[in-house]
Length: 382
Image 1 (cartoon, one colour):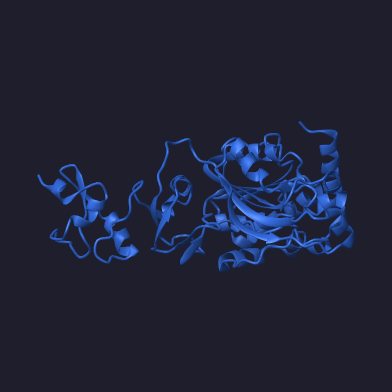
Image 2: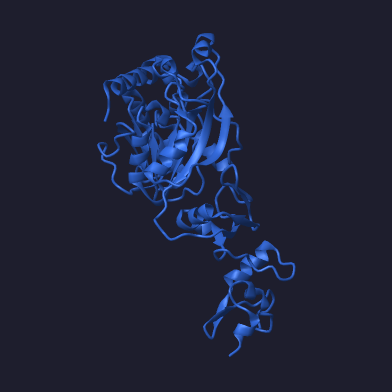
């Protein structure tokens, strides 16, 4: 339940983003400076297509555009002037849809002003983007239905809300199973003292409401998400002596995480996977998070949780996933690509699966390779 203090914070943030800030350069910290990470060409082009006024009013703390977006329905929490929404609306295509929600009326007005401009630029028959004036912790009040989105993104907005758990609960509600919260936000090295938590400028600068970094995992688990997966993180610097004195020994980072909502299925086991290179802009490799980079056609062993995510999310079509607890066939010196071809061409014989080795179109090759997947040559006899 919202408290009088929550209402006061909301009003202060609306004033800061609606009246004090006019452009990104007005910030007094680098909390809202995009992390330096290679951006695929098609995303750079999509960002370049966004109207100049929309881009100038962009206050995010990272580039929150995940991979594998075609035809997806995406919700942007704290969409501001709509920069990310407009880039995403081009990337999801006409069959996808992007909704932006923001509590600052002036920002929503800027975003709505350029819908026709962007749809005409993209050559779309009808708008595939909508902007709502509302609160990210009250998505139901804004008319956003259960399990209606594939992806929810947020660019340095969750820290501006006092009740982070309520935000995550609402995100969990509106995500489809297999869906993802992909978000950039600010985290603190310690529990923030009252002096920081009540400082109006620090709230506006995304520091006063920063979550203690250990609490994200606790909240995610409580709500039902898989454990947070770190993508990138960068230390935040403060260019204001007065603010430095208030902050003291506390340190802040801007970090991007991904949280997945998975169906309640039985336990999985670790196994091997092969990325097929089918995601636009990531044809050679997919940097999934700080722990996993999948190179095209390369066998990678992954843990149980990662297996569950790849199996149940939009990434399933881009991975060949081996049997639970097993390894891909390795007889001979086959490459990952050859293994992929073998697995893709398996057959059944007298109730058993078997595999023809490469070049064995006449059926005279060895069946031995498939023996590592639950079947032995001795089992393949009539």
